[in-house]
Image 1 (cartoon, rainbow, N blue to C red):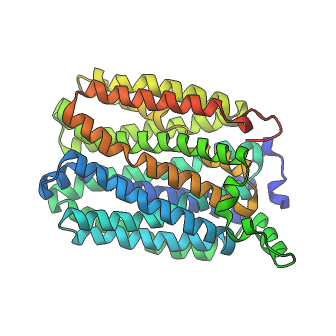
Image 2: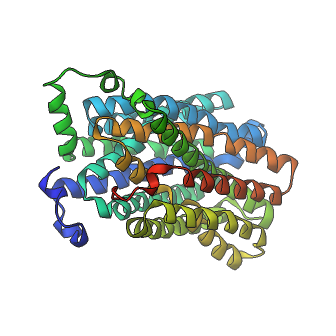
Image 3: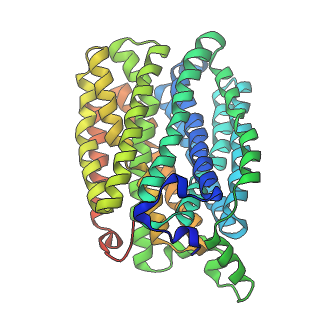
Length: 419
């Protein structure tokens, strides 16, 4: 481990960071921001897409599902490549893929082209998450990794705010297709990252050691390593299921929240964008709080408290009767429903070794996101057939399910791991 990561974690301040640490934090925050912006374009454009292409709510929900299939493929393939050739290189490649695939939706005038381009964009975002959280984990001291990862994810939430603003300005004036041209922004950012962010010392050490000894099967195909023992396989599967709930709940809420608000309170697209911004602010506050709780009390208490409160607070959406009540409710729901998202990268990065750390993060995130990608069409189907109360009951069930799964992971009870 490098000297810069051995400094006192109790007195770690931004002014003490090395240049590479600062660039790592800024770059990962921006990468998360571009990923969130890309994902939420679908959320804000959903009503317009459904109307203009003449599809059902279920068909609209399938857009996220196709994206998650791409995420699975991209996460596994690019995750293994990141463990082989470098986290930064893969990060820049995937940014370019996401940018061009998102911009191409401008030319999509049927639902199958939308599905195709969202699948390609998913391939790009597949390893972006794993590369980002691994870069943070390998460049910063252990005890503050929860808060620092949360800070990077909070930076990512600004991408959601940009998506809300762009949607309010572009969709009414130019149509939903034009919104996706904004997705070309990551191309320029990719060049900045490539020039100013270096690989971690941990990765360079592993890379050097590979040249001196014969590689094992796990090193050649690190995706196998995350399932190499029954205990490791169960841990990986359990984390995947938790990520499934996390991303499924997030995309389920964010994809359908504008439509729910338009239906329940009669809000326009621009008005629903305002309330989405409020939700994102709540999520950001929740992430910061969760990171602090994780650093202080560990994953069991932090995940447990947030999952139970997320299960309870989603019902508050049904109580919204005016703009003021909605403002408060969206902040509370966002605080608990997505505050814990940054914790997954922390946990996975501490439970899996450097040799296949990006692969582990990518497998957990991409498989979890794929499974969670089925939640938006399920929620769309519930909205078609049942009441909003049934939709909120579904959210409560999945958060409680994740809570039970979390309690069964033995490694989260260990005292010798610094989260």
